[in-house]
Length: 243
Image (tube, rainbow, N blue to C red):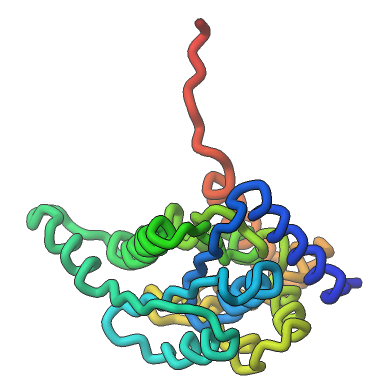
């Protein structure tokens, strides 16, 4: 039984406590995509800190067809926001790579996410900020985040909440339904999350919370993805010499 009101209130308190200990008086800086995760994180931060201490950063890469969703969110919350088009930075870095080096699809797909995170830290360091991570448990479980891209940040309100739970919290927060239930798109290759994963978040969330799953092949796929991507969630391995 998931009590979204109780969890929402506890998360708001957790954010307040984090800033009290790790940035008293600082601002929360949130990358705004227009999807449920960034919308819920921004709304949680507004409730925890007040709208004057939350900064939204919209980061299209050239043309973003759904940027109106991000604009709706910052208007709904009434938060200060900046729009930074990262297209020139992405193209500049790709163009600076050696011409004779073959660029993999992973290189070109993950680079925008990493430049977006660099952008968030640029805004944060110029505005006395702390950067919010907006990943949820379902995405992290199967490694559906870019290492040092959207997988980075200073504090993470949603890392232990599934997609379904995030949606329920979004509803309790009074966010527009169009944002809470917006079909999640990775923002990298143009496909939906579920197209890329090969299974639905409903199936994944049920498996994470109950261990129940109907299709053995899907279970095997989820388990394999989880095992392969655990390194993204763990601290960087560091050599410890015997001195």
